[in-house]
Image 1 (cartoon, chains in turn orange, cyan):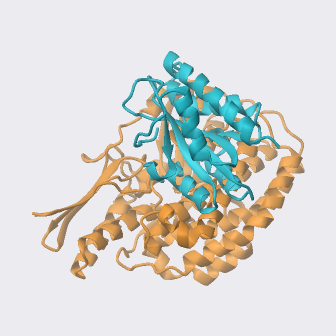
Image 2: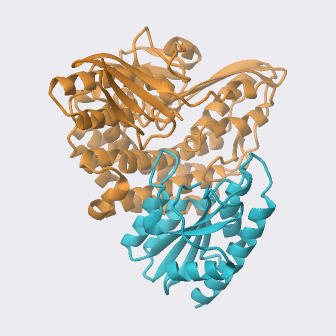
Image 3: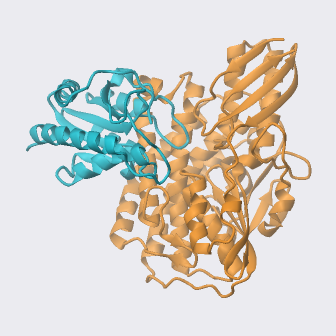
Length: 428
Length: 172
């Protein structure tokens, strides 16, 4: 038996492990082991008011903080019979555009790109790709700024609340965002071209299913009440349990999801595969130019999808700012009832996020949260297993196999506190 | 908190000398890192916030976005140094302060949630700026805990030294 260890799968968030057990060149099994302890947040919020719940829930994640907040708000508003004012809805869309730019710029450039260019980290890239790293940081800073203007803070902003916003962004701030957006769009176009020029290895390729929300009005977007599946089906978000079929596995603290007993993908590539025809602007043109049917098989294309999506988000910002600025600040909409249930589905940067609530006498009775990385875990295992089999079959060295596996895991932009921290190849 | 190799900085005079050695002749910026919800872990942010009033253009905290702040400084056409301040487990008595030069920063991990200090320091170096991390040994990082007496005292001492340094280097 021989073991090949990657002591730390860098450039992902969280602590976990991957064990690949090999018998000769045959891969016996791949397990993705999540070691991070359960945080029990769903139990923690039971008995809380919706307002208190919103103070706790976004703490699940400091980068998807607004996605968690938005998903919770959507679920709670459905449960409480609240129809949010138009300006609240538009400001929420604006904040999600900011979060998308912030997260996608960080993942594509600083976490994924070094693998493709043959560097151990973004730090090592600085000498040769200093301008690209600075461009990524500039985009990330801008995404953070949009999040701050809309939510009140860079991380864990408190302005978005059930029924509306505590405070809306000023016209001056919105005008500043518009101005800056125009400066940054050419940067985002360059980023798409860079990711389109990369070579995407074929090793992980396999058919899978893709899920995303169906944004309303036949537009591309980051929230919706139904879920699109790449097999052509559309399912209500309220039926999220049928879509995710959560189960517990012995080697991981994170639950797993399968749809009709098969793994599936959520994330930017799923969004573009399901809704890419709805893109507009340069993002539409570049998607059309660079999309191929390999996207349907190869998770590494999630990196290119994130770059295109980031461009789309930037292109939407000026109009989104104008729409928000054109409306007067409405009052916060009060609950219409004290008992009910509802599911909020939004597209966090790394995939579909569900928050389901049951409210009893005005308090949280049941909370159920399903994160995108938990949905992706089985799919990551599927593509990693194929990568290991094919690379070993091609006589690749251990370091090459190790990098191949890391690239697959990182392509999903996992957040375990969502995925892996140790890859082990165990030979028997 | 950062992992680090140790460098001297025992007394106030030592600290002043160590800081003067790393910042060179240019302007001095301070960037406080840490989590103020976790007692001593937030010392860097608290010191930076205290310095914001006298030096609003030169003192920043992680709350304003660390990498964006560093990017802006890196693009300034001036001689400058950035001092990151953070709590760090030095395996020393609580309140111990150490100055870690750029080449000894070991926090190189970039994750979904955070850009590494080493990347920010390398970016500064590439644009001709200097960088160092001032580390403070915490006593407690208890969630919602209070800053310990030792770290409060060390923070005051560090703030005094930085005030003097920034006043002398950042005057128009």
